[in-house]
Length: 196
Length: 285
Image (cartoon, rainbow over all chains, first blue to last red; front, side):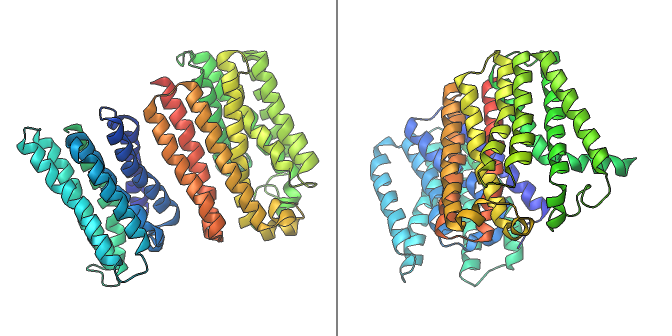
């Protein structure tokens, strides 16, 4: 399946937004956070370029599930390392364990449970932590991170249902929505990080 | 008139010429010389465009019999008979000579490098080696490395280590670019009797060479960018793009297919484009 010109343009914009973040948008954070945010935005950049080159069919590759997990994990780790330093190492260990389990359980019956647990945990951190930070006095702008988490969550569920063979929308629509989801999510994360 | 212009336009392979021109501009900008030096900058753009276009047009003339035997290139202006060899030769000679003259007027060293680029591309690569050995691409690569080295030499007034590194990165990137292409059009090259790495050494060894040259190109660009003193942000972005290139090269070794192979070809082009933009932006900001 080939992407439309609009989809490719939106993907290119997403790649540019993420590239800007990697170059200039995360410099004010600690080294650890910079590393994690680079990981998350970096995966989005490479994913965007591969989607541009190969089209949505690349999503059927089994490696995508493991690599895609790096986006919420990287963002959540960056957020924790910058705002709740004491939880950084425990969550890092949990994340590494999660990645390992996601990779190892791909062909077992536990695959979905493992994926949902670790993805869900990272998603919940990304969604709820900004509210906590807001309550502690941060600018409400930080809630853009929650918005990004909600968008990535919705996108993940759409794709997940398509990959399980029970799409809630026709696959063609899901694949045409995907570039927009990725762009909006990248914009929301980029804006939110400015207020962190 | 418009149709005639289009024929000559196709003769200079605008995309390839554009990418090489971009490398030359990048080399110049990395020298941190004043970009607002309008004369030097526009002279660089004009001389490089003319020289690269002329050199490409010469290749089109030399390879017109090969182009005729390959489905992909049969409709080009020369094999299709829409332009005569004399027309194309005159066009190539006019462009090249005016490009070289302008280059020497800007700086003798710059002119020398531009002339060397044309010599390696037209005489060594196309005329002498292309039909004899698959290793001809090394010389084609050296020719491809000349614009970025020349651009930097025009800015700094000498050929320095950074210039050589940047040239090396283009030289190492070229096998990724050309070999993936020669694998995709393997049958065409066989029919034309052109020795390529896939036909002489087989597909697996060619994939290894592609993977190794990708590693080499990424390392050379990385060291070049480090030596240029770009900020960490640009280095991070380059690292991200390099990881993508290396992953795709390794994937093409593990799960070879024509689709992955051509994807690598496209990604390698995007990687080089990205690396050039990073160097341009990084040294100017």
